[in-house]
Image 1 (tube, rainbow, N blue to C red):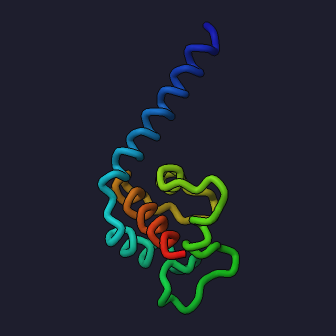
Image 2 (image 1 turned 45 degrees about the vertical axis):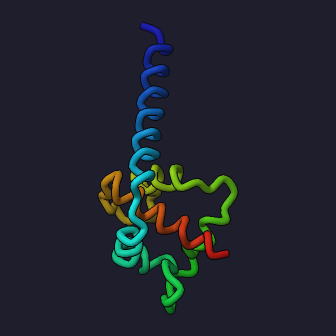
Length: 110
C-alpha cells in the first residue's frame, strides 16, 4: 500500500469541503450572521459597533477582516473547526457562511 492514494483522497476531501463552504456562502445571510455573532461570539469579540466591551485577548470582528489573506470562504471553513480557545458552537455550513458574511460586511465599512 502506498501513501499516495491516501494523500490524494485527503486533498480531494479538503477541496470538496472548501467548495461546499464557498457555494453555501453565495447565499449567506449576514442578518442571521449578526444574530449568531451576538449569541456565540460577543462574550469574547466585539461583534458590533454598539457593543461596549469584550475580551482584550480576542480581536474585534472588524479587525479580523483586515488580517492578511482574509477571505469569507477561509473564515467560514475555519468556523466549522474552531481553534481550542473558541467554544464548540456546532455550526452548520450555512450558519458558518452567514457568520463569515456578517464579519466580512463589518470590514466593508472601513
